[in-house]
Image (cartoon, rainbow, N blue to C red; front, side, top):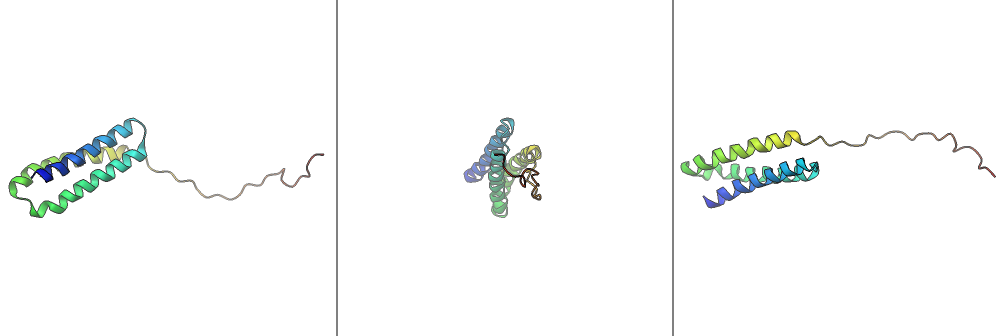
Length: 100
């Protein structure tokens, strides 16, 4: 049970780091922390079938709360923007002879 609680706590800590990064206007750091939180929750999901009923009773609600915070923080992360490819712009001075 201790290892399961540690995974849940790690996920919650990563979400807290993401929330702080968003407050500091650092969306890249927030994305990384959210990815780590999602990985910890995925590890808990993978272990769910082997958990006992009492373990599920503790871990399930804790993980659900972390997941809600993760989703709320992820919704605050701005979308990534990429530069579009455009054609070369013509420079009208390019074909002029240099001034002497």
